[in-house]
Length: 273
Image 1 (cartoon, rainbow, N blue to C red):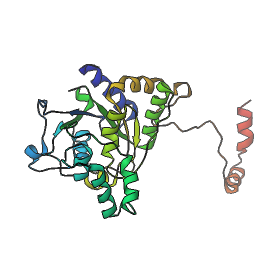
Image 2: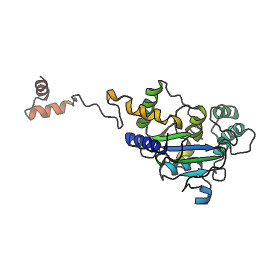
Image 3: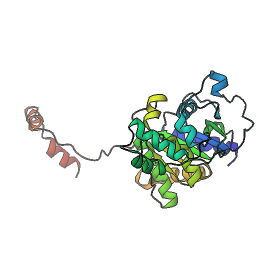
């Protein structure tokens, strides 16, 4: 998709779902790229390192374009996940950490947890570029869309409409940047992700927010599905409440109707003839 198509798709998704924050585009480079104009590097623009999930928040809420290398990231689990650490066995290190801080009962169970996560190989994501999709600055490797459960439901409708495949996701509740950024790129599959504890603690992710993440090359598939899925039933967001019914009231309301000289049930029946 070209820049205009990316912008158009981003605007459609944002407006159709009435999203609170912007859909996010991510690209991974095995070298230091020529950053787009006005890209902010935290180590230079803010004079500090930040977490990857903070960079995501800066992108989807501040509407910044953010460039990350190992110099910009302070979160050690993220540095391990995105291949920025020289460790020979990053999964083993992260497993030890999960057991040490109480995320897992022991290292054996921690290893089971960590092995389901998506890890970049060393140098595969030497640089990470994040930007609002609506800017259309680059062809994204991954697209992440934050929304409430009903908004994410509509994205799942769109995906299953076009592919016929249900979305399989695994939830750990920690270091979930591996799943909403790395996994769609590595697996070529869409994911529904529950943002982790770090997202909520460090980057202000709200209690009601989930993430729908997909490979960037499948954006057009998603927008087409969102336009068509469930339309015959009037499916959309906000979900319209069904209103074609007559409500029942407690006896006291019926007593009031009699005292007012009304026979509500009879009047309703006659009006329906």
